[in-house]
Image (cartoon, rainbow, N blue to C red; front, side, top):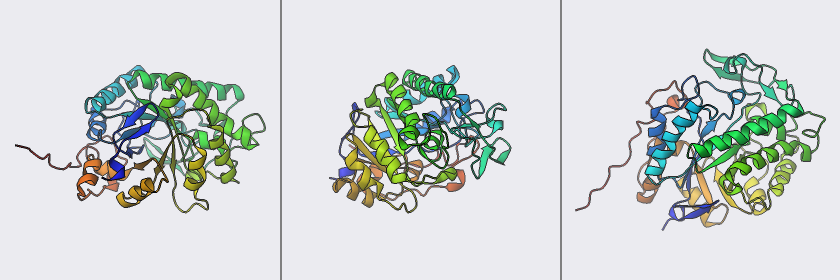
Length: 357
C-alpha cells in the first residue's frame, strides 16, 4: 500500500492519509473579507485530504494584503467560516486556518487609507494587488514596541475566532515575505530594540505570536509554515541557515502540531535535511512534489506528510486519484486569482463514483 495513504498523527489528530492541501490564496472573498458559499463548496470538495490548510486569512484589517482575500476579525467573517468548517467536517475532513498578516506587502487602498506596517520602514520592491489593479508598494510605517504587542494580540484573538468558527487548528504563516518573515529577516528588520538586531531578537516576534496562538488553541493545534531562501516579496536574510536553525531549535518542547517547510527555487542549503532532525513533532514537506517524489520522501523518512498545492486545486479528489493511479486534471493558472467566480474554483471534475451491486 502507498505510504502516502497511511494514517499520520498531526498534533492531537490522526489524519487518514499523508496528503495535506496547501494554503493557497484564491481571492474569492467579497470586499469585506467574507468568504462566499462557493468557498464552502471549494473546501468541502477537498475534504478527503489528510488535512486542509486554508488560504491565508488576515487576523485584523491592517493585516490584509490582497484584494478579495478573507479575514477572521468580524462576526460576518466568523459566521461564513463556520459554514466552511461544518461542510468539511460533515464529509469527515479536518481543516486548519492559516493566519496571514501581510505587513508591508499591502497598500493604503486595502487598509482604509492607513499606511502598511512593518518592523522597519523599508519599501519592498513590487506591486500590490488592489481593487483598481496592481499598484506600487509604498514605504511602510515602523511598528512601535507597544504596537508589536497589539499585533501579537491580534493573532491571539484571530486564533480564538478561528476555533469558534470550528477550525481544527491554526497555522502561522511565517513565509512569503509577510510580517513574521519581515521580522525574521535581516534585510527587512533593521530595528535596534528587543525585536531587531540579533537572531534572538529577530525571532522574538514569531515566538511571541506562536505563544499567543497556543494560548488559545493549545500548542497541539498550532502549526507554523516557513520557507527559507524563498526571497518572495523582496525578502532577504544575511544568514538564513542561522536564522532558521535558531528558530526551529527554540520550538523544542512546545508540542506544536507540525512544522511546515516549503522550499522554492534552488536554495543553497537542503533545509529539509537540516531542520527535520531538529523538530520533535510532525514534519510537513511542501512545494513541487509529485506522487512519486512524495512517496519517496515519506518512505525514506525525510518527512511525515506531504503538502500539495495546485494538484489539490485542480483535483478535489487527489487522494483517490493517487490510490487508483488515475490521470490528474491540469490546473488553469489563468483562474488562480480571480474576482469571485466559480470558474477554475469549484468546477474541476472529480472521478466518477463507482457503483457496487
